Image 1 (cartoon, rainbow, N blue to C red):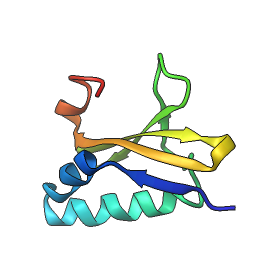
Image 2 (image 1 turned 180 degrees about the horizontal axis):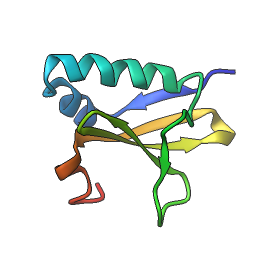
Image 3 (image 1 turned 45 degrees about the vertical axis):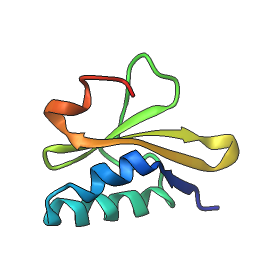
Image 4 (image 1 turned 180 degrees about the vertical axis):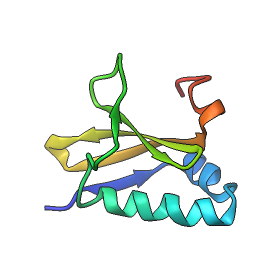
Length: 88
């Protein structure tokens, strides 16, 4: 059963500001999360129970998996030097 992916407006704005080539790759990775929420190369974030990080070039997608609801929430999509500065 596929997962549902939710992207907040603020995260959608982050994705829209990405360079065109990176944006296409990020969207492709997010779509693939629906069928495989923990793909090869994903890293579980320390200090969080359900948060993961997916690498797309120099950019990172931070997301949270809710297995009981078959739901994924995209929390951030930023350059690697910016993503860990705050936890919002």
